[in-house]
Length: 240
Image 1 (cartoon, rainbow, N blue to C red):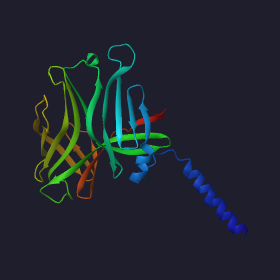
Image 2 (image 1 turned 45 degrees about the vertical axis):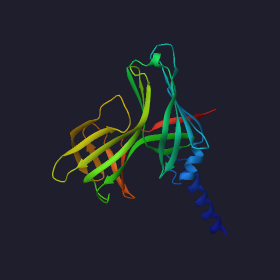
Image 3 (image 1 turned 135 degrees about the horizontal axis):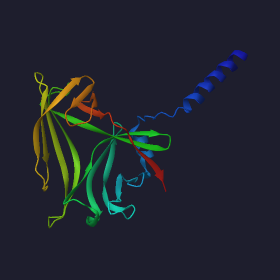
Image 4 (image 1 turned 90 degrees about the vertical axis):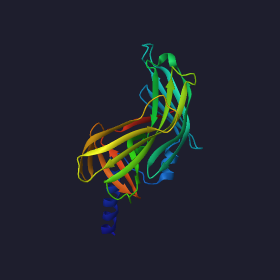
């Protein structure tokens, strides 16, 4: 009995020490992630995110550009979903923007997929690209890949003022060159032109470096490629 009691004590101590670990806790259950997302979150004085139970989100941004303290700049409304621990924003649209506080003629809000992690009571988000293969089976880098962002544009020079839709990015990685082909295309009536260029890249799986883009760790899964950027998480704290 003493031996059994000693084993129980050792096991209990193991779990106690594990629970004191403050490293980010990765949650693999998408349903559990959605449940934990529900509520209001803020990052400092600038960003606020609210996730509702009906998969509606509200994104609010504040600014001190006019030196009057932090004032509401814009509010974006849309839907969201979680898949493979990644947060996707859909159908976004401006519900409010104070153009008097925008120092630019054209102001763009981007909504990109983000990896979700929880650390104790904090929500941690980090950008990740989710690329789909074009004309190949999607198990290696080489070939053509595409991904999309959601964008909302405020154009002070336009009578319409607002537009929203998707931006498509395309990359073609050749085997016999250290330069890839890159293109950007607006898939809606945007006041901006697309872009195309050659960019240098260095690939030593799983590390990928592309000129002008953050270094990334590459993952292939379910016929998709994921670029997990090596940048800090954005931390959000829950508030009421």
